[in-house]
Image 1 (tube, one colour):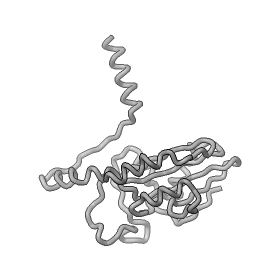
Image 2 (cartoon, helix red, strand yellow; image 1 turned 30 degrees about the horizontal axis):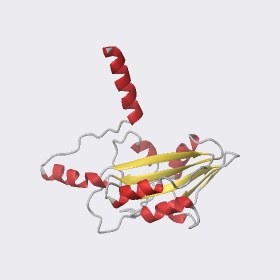
Image 3 (cartoon, helix red, strand yellow; image 1 turned 180 degrees about the vertical axis):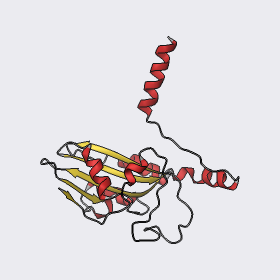
Image 4 (cartoon, one colour; image 1 turned 90 degrees about the horizontal axis):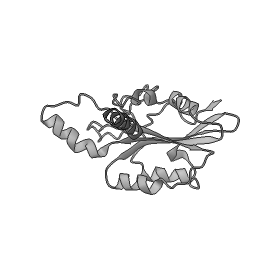
Length: 185
């Protein structure tokens, strides 16, 4: 059973971002501008959704210093996130980071977030939970590639447009390089 602690957001946002070819906006159904502040009229840089699974619910907070370093350096801006858990019976629950109690180690991510744009829907949570074993959890981080903002602006000012952007997992690149080396060898 899926227990939602907030209304539906943008249906299918996680599935749409998987190929990293869709630009998300903060608007929710029935709203004109999402939860982004009015002064944030400048378009977002690229958005990425990162899902980190913790089998056996073993989140210990060791990622927080590295995440904080990325935020503090202006490399990324966290714009949404939630914590998904699947209990031993397979029941799914999720909680927005900003709704976690202060005693939760995962709640520390709230301090790193710039805002919460509610980009992840209950359908997205159900899709994420399919990949989790019982008695496991996942942190879902939605972040803007803030480092790209000056490049985005320069491209626009020169009359250019971003035609495509594809992210390839490092392990896939390593597999390809190994295969090429074997063919060359």
